[in-house]
Image (cartoon, rainbow, N blue to C red; front, side, top):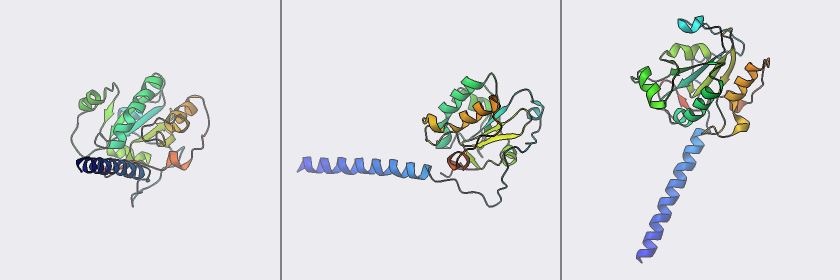
Length: 198
């Protein structure tokens, strides 16, 4: 009788874990709802940045929209760091933290082992048409929007065939005028701004 109870209990526990995993996968694959006041920003549009960002026209600029409390952002951090390592000598990488809690740039840099600028300016997301995290924005040297979208169709960014952010960087660096991306690349998935609700 004890064996039957133990097997039943383990089966129930395993089923709950599988169901939870499946539910989280299903939720991850749902697009982030588009905000009511959202204004789309077209590819090729000039993004009018301010401060030190406005003066940087020597390299393309990659803006990583990030929420340290968003599970999707945390799943993505290894992939993002690999992009910085591979392309940091040719592209200016910047983390834009989208979070209503208090963090410092140093806390973000230390926690995620990043040696790149960290900004806290939600207006940049509006300028670029970003409403979820994580999102990638790639601007050319003239600060025109080359790409805004997802890093990958895989939650952990492991599918090389859908490595959209990497494809965008490669396309810009190799002077491809315009790469056509599918909806999985361009439709936002992840955590809604300003709070992590997914």
